[in-house]
Amino acid sequence: MASLYFYFSSMDSGKSTYLLQSAHNYESAGKRVLLLTPGVDDRFGQGMVTSRIGLKKEALAISGEDNLYDAVSNEHNNKLSCVMIDESQFLTPEQIWQLSDVVDKLKLPVLCFGLRTDAFGEAFPASRVLLSIADELCELKSICKVCEKKASMQVRLDREGKIVKSGTQVQIGGNDSYLSVCRKHYKELIGR
Ligand SMILES: [Zn+2]
Image 1 (tube, helix red, strand yellow):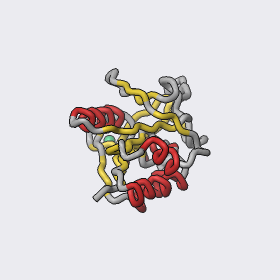
Image 2 (tube, rainbow, N blue to C red):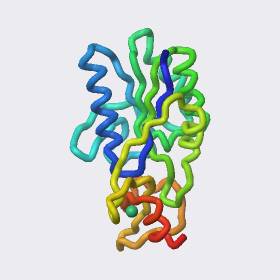
Image 3 (cartoon, helix red, strand yellow):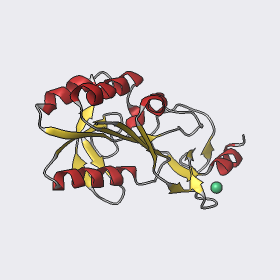
Image 4 (cartoon, protein in one colour):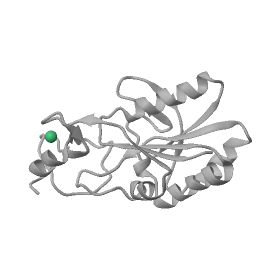
C-alpha cells in the first residue's frame, strides 16, 4: 500500500540530508525516485536538493501553478518507485491534495519533507493540510539552541542578529537566519 508521508521538523534537523539518503537507498535497490523542489527556494539554484553537509542531487523545480499529479504522471510511465518533495511547506494546499492523488491513483509512495510551523508559530498552509491528511507523520528531531531539549520551532534573526517578531511567512533564502528552539524558549525569545 502506498502512503503519503510527512517528515516534519524545525530548521536544521537534517531534513534534506535524510531525503537524499532515502533517495539513495531507493536507487541502490535499482528503483527510480522523482525529486521535486518548490522554485521559491533558490538558495542553491533551482532544481537542486542541497543539504547542509554538502550532499546534493538534481530535482524537478516546481512552481505554485504546477499540477503535481500531472507532473508526476508525465514522469511516471510505470518507471517510478517513489516521489520525494523537499521544502514541502512551500507547496500550495491544493498541491498537497494533488500529491494525495499520486498515492491513491498512481499507487506511488510520496514523501514530503518540510517545516511544520513558521517563525511566528503558525503552521504553513501546506503543512496544515499534510498534518490533516498524511497517512504517516514522522518528526525529525533537532535540538534547542538554548537548552538542548527537542526543538519544535524556530525564531528568525535579522542581519543584526535581532529576533524578528512579525513579518511575512516566506523568508527562506533571504538574508535572515534561523535558530531552532523548544517551545518554552520560543515563547521567551519572541516575548509571548
Ligand atoms: Zn529550549
